[in-house]
Image 1 (cartoon, one colour):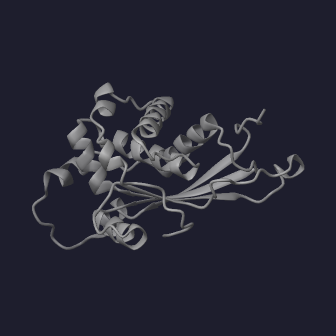
Image 2 (cartoon, helix red, strand yellow):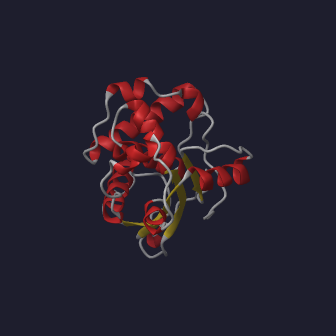
Image 3 (cartoon, one colour):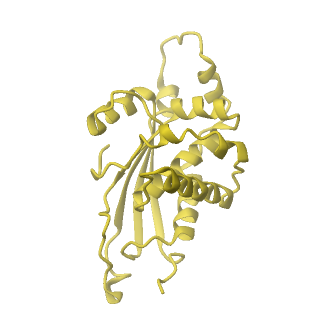
Length: 216
């Protein structure tokens, strides 16, 4: 039986390239679109501390079958459609914006460390997640729930990819989405039943993990 992950730590490096860049703009802004207004409804960005609490909770409950070390790391980059479209074109040859990209560093068949080395090895880097806040806001509007829930939903989806989950067909995708709902509920984010019912399976099937390691 595998040991519990409850005694290990997970460090999340949050790179806010969306709200911070918005605050730094000094030029007069054009008339805001409905999505711009919806983004501003989130009175303040999700704090790095909250992100780390969420990811730590999810990581512990998933108890992934990966080498067990004392600490793990991942990066989360919050950005806009322009940057995520550039990354999507560079790494997936799709020159369009998307909601989330996952850049995993672990191989699919990752060997386990000997028990004697479990808690003596250096930190293990899991990979990078990139989320477009603009696309998340649009999808949140379409689903009729707060942006905070959509961001959590996309982050959970990306984390599953970093830990080896994938969705080559509708059956595995539905299993993955059900797991995301459990993950969100574990951190107090309520997922409406209609959220799962309205998921576009075709669109999700176009968002695979990118095995490239650090990307941003």
